[in-house]
Length: 260
Image 1 (cartoon, one colour):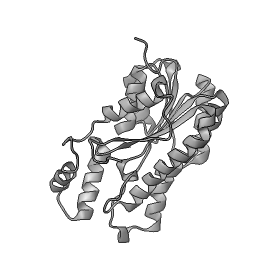
Image 2 (cartoon, helix red, strand yellow):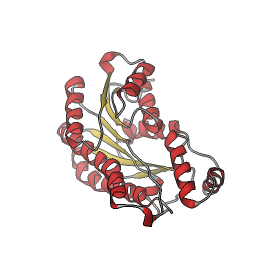
Image 3 (cartoon, one colour):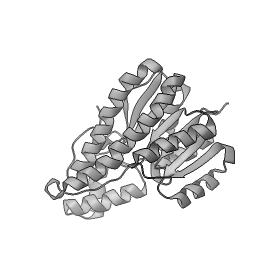
Image 4 (cartoon, helix red, strand yellow):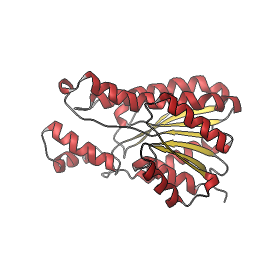
């Protein structure tokens, strides 16, 4: 059976750890050439070595997604090396938990700069060449936090609600060019970011990490955390030919926490 992403070229942001790392592994296994992006070049190069990709199939670029010029330059470098871009995975993100009254305006700005504007920069940089080729898939890693309210993470939720809204709007505009735009909304996923979330959120709620985790799992019908590989497999599907008829969707990967 032919690999699902054979001959495809994908840009993955936040690729050095967690969900982004798993998506990179899954895409490599499915035959894609990859531009791996994160802030830490050493970690990116270690991942490229681990994936055992031929030098012609991988490019690692260390940059901050809040730097718009660097994002556009990365897209130009990717096209220069591979000739085209088929898939963009906007995965880079940050998390911060506080009671609403303790947030500063800078806290909100920091979240928006990475979680929203990082998505915006790369999407605008990739969309023009995708539309010119009349082909492409943009996959935004949002969150269940973008679909409902939750205590002590208003800045994070606002940024992810914005990503869900942006996904829908860009999907409508890009559809005329056969470019699909979808979001994956993970719930609790076993990554180092989840460890950060549990530590910050339990502190904000005035409870222990163990009690916070128990309460969190009580909201998950499947009764377990998601694995990053599960998110990665959904990303593979959205990037594949099998999903060419799907656009503007925000897909929950959360064990049943959200039913809308």
